[in-house]
Amino acid sequence: MKLFKCALLGGAMLLPSAAFADELNLICSADVVICEKLVSEFEASHSDIDVNMVRLSSGEAFAKVRAEARNPQTDLWWGGTGDPHLQAGQDGLSAEYKSPMLDELQDWAKGQAEVSNYHTVGVYSGALGWGYNIDLFKEKGIEAPKCWADLLDPALKGEIQIADPNSSGTAYTTLATLVQLMGEDEAFDFLKKMHANVSQYTKSGSAPVKAAARGETGLGIVFQHDAVAQAVAGFPVGVVAPCEGTGYEIGSMSLIEGAQNPEAAKTFYDWVLTAEVQNMMPDAGSFQIPSNASATPPKEAPDLSTIKLIDYDFAEYGSAERRKALLSRWDDEVGSMPLQ
Image (cartoon, rainbow, N blue to C red):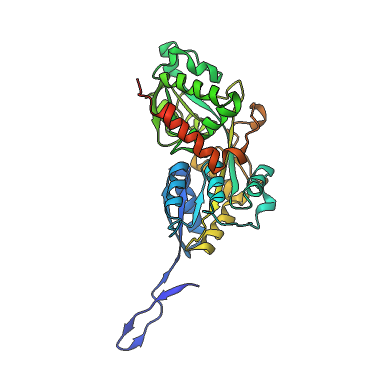
């Protein structure tokens, strides 16, 4: 119900002068331009709801939701990799919600809802890979890596950036992908060897390829659509899908348990799953595959049917126990190593 501010003048009640809008407290775990596009379009079509948005990486968003469990300050969490969303559901931090839009979604988006007992849902998808600076590699005489194994090439010393998997869903997906491709011990051996070529572990998952686009580093391990976004923006970025195979994300959305504004959250939740809204995303530089089956994938988006994708186990690697164990091991064996 909309409340109104009223004023008294000389004992007479004046007509309502302004409306108190409903609020929506939103965490957005995508690029800030995409987040701002969603907020502006939603507020334009829902003038009775004011959105308070904060942009956080997936790991940061999960940490915030967990820290506020007893007194939630967030109503809805949109975007970011599905693993922490699945963990939030498992930990009782997100609420069960079956959107009336479910029947319009791709099977993989509905599958994300089903595996979480409807505590989250898929909103987009994209494959893992990397983007590299074509001009910088040519200048330095470095051959562009085509496979995960190529990232250990000594010629790439100091040329690789990847995010920290504690803060970044992109980096956690990389960690989980390598474990599934190679086996856990072999994956950590690979990461420790690749560490010699890493110049920085960033907070944001998309930051490495933005640095590569600007020539601040040679290569960023990211979701391929983030590399495509830089190429579309005019930067000399080449996009690679690793030859051995690669993981992928199901970007997800969760309604927070105990939300202060659940009805406003559900309104946004249903709205953002429509084909009309998802078709607007390329205007904000978003080149993921949309979850609504009637939405049109951006022509620049990587074609997942041409990429060798692993059978990524979202249930296992989105579980609290598995995720915590992998992050702890990464901290002990990789994150503790000094950068050279």
